[in-house]
Amino acid sequence: GYRSRAAYKLKEIDEALHLIKPGQLVVDLGAAPGAWSQYLRRKFAPKVAGQGGAAVGDLNGRILALDLLEFEPIEGVEFIQGDFREQAVADALAAALGGASVDVVVSDMAPNLSGVEDVDAARVEHLIELALDFCQQHLKPDGALVAKVFHSAGYSQLVELFKQNFQVVKPVKPKASRDRSAETFLVGLRLKRPKR
Ligand code: SAM
Image (cartoon, rainbow, N blue to C red):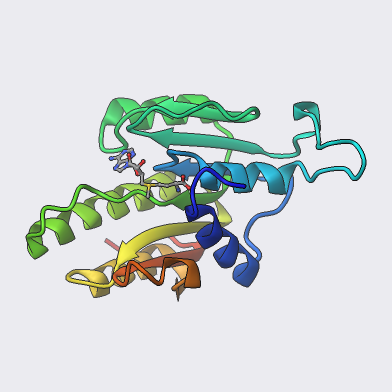
């Protein structure tokens, strides 16, 4: 099992678009409690029949996870605790990457919602802008970003921001997120330099 049912959302997105492959470097933003990281880790270390699972030495790929909250360690997953909105945290992520380019960035980050539509839209947009900046700095040109957004105020601006940064932008609504009606995901494929 997984630490959270959130894993099934990433699984559905991945099964639809075939984004996650062994050998990749993936950054997991807003990773706690860790279900997406568990999913990624399993894709990188498929269990060997009859051997009770792969050892960490068999891990083919690298997962770098970030969250505000504490994160119960997962063998083979590197974790940084901090607020993605802080420059020091962006610097720590960059240092951990050590110049390596990222294949896929996944972000399930959600801000604390105030209930005030404009305020919440601005908070979501801020996190998305930071994720897009992170991609511009660290993602491979043929890389991908998967990010949680909300089908509410500001949605069309977010699609626009994605289109400024990616050649291909796909909205995906996993069945696993049906209960939270406003939640949906945007997938950006193939980075482009934004016209700003
Ligand atoms: N994908 C995760 C999983 O599978 O376990 C669930 C993620 S949960 C829906 C959203 C997470 O985003 C929370 O753990 C929250 O602490 C984190 N988060 C929200 N804003 C953040 C920020 N500014 N910096 C880092 N993490 C943030």
